[in-house]
Image 1 (tube, rainbow, N blue to C red):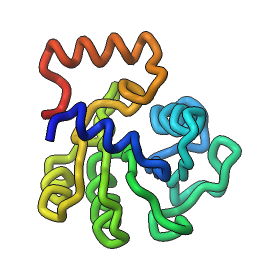
Image 2: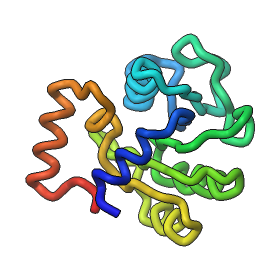
Image 3: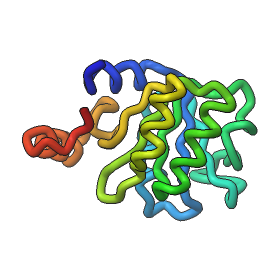
Length: 153
C-alpha cells in the first residue's frame, strides 16, 4: 500500500488517540492533538502521568478509552513506542502512525511488530503534513522530505 493510500485511510477514521501528549503546550504530540481535534476528529490524549491535556480528559493507556479507537498516533521515545504497539495488538487497534518530525518515535522493532500483527503502520512523517488544511510549513516539510527520500515507504 502506498504512503498516500495509508495516510488517507488513517485520516478517514474518526476516533484517534494521540500517545505522548504533554502537560505543557510546547510539544509535537500536543500540536498534532490540537490539529486533529480542530479538524473535527474525536481525539483522545494518552499520557499515564496526566489527568487533563489541552483542557480535555487524558487517558493513561489505550485500554482505558471507552469504545476504543480506530487509530493511534505515537509521539514518544522509540522504546515507549514498542510498548504502545503491543497494547494496540492487545486491544485491537488496526492502524498506527509512528511520528517522525524534528524528533523520532520510530523503532524498527515496533514497525516489525505492527507488520507481524496485521496492524497497518505508517513508520514516519507527521500527520500534520497530510491533515487538511495543511499549513505552509508542513507542506514544505512534506515536499522536502519527499524529494530527499525521507518519507516512509
